[in-house]
Length: 322
Image (cartoon, rainbow, N blue to C red; front, side, top):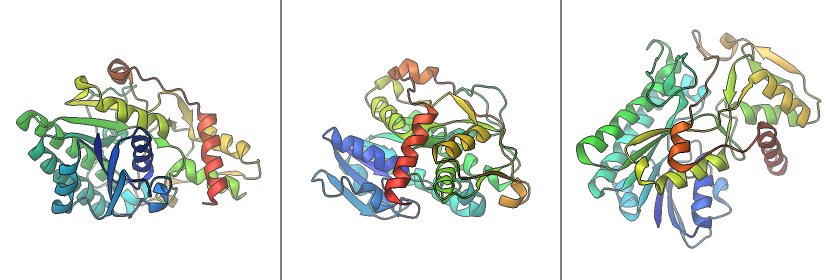
């Protein structure tokens, strides 16, 4: 088959491209390299079935050309990372909403199966746990730029489902929950690569807030497996799926694990949110996905333990020196 991945030089996109090439498929990738990197594709860049274009997902002509070549479209390009989102809310909204609009418009013309990557952020300040795909969404005030990303991705979901209902466009929406693994950069506030880089350098491992907030970290390899299997499951079309891991760990415990696995030279320190982010930054205590819909559709259950994930991230940063 033929696949088109927007944001294909990014963290998840590059792993997905590798997986598809290994399975014998042909892959086209589009990325503007604002947060991705061609180095992420080093293992496949010379492969005869791999093709890439440097450009933006808002380029209608280019996107239409690449959509036309593909059987399946994975729209992964987006503004990502809490730091980037808070600092550049305009960029976040324009990139996410306009990008999804361009991709869906092109896909609808040729009836192409299209994945829209969403996020656990859309659950916002919800307190009912675990989060289910049909739960109500609860965002903060519009004066809090923290919620620009969540709202923009919710609009992407609404738009995709509108195309599905009105035009019959086959779409699948995936809400990622803290995907982690090799190649993820800490540049935009991603917690695990930041902790690992600090630990390997013997620097203080800095924890924002109390560190009591809890998260579920899904390994990128398992997330990619879900994306591939969902594309093969006809009952997935027109539906929303939580994708990730449902095992919790506190940020304090994650930092302590990284400290121990990187040699124990670092100290754990805490920084108040108002020191790291603009006034009024809000965070959630817990975020757990209900994976029952994913289990029913493709039989998925996460198998990677947090300790193993941390070890793989440490190994990657040790080898690359990043």
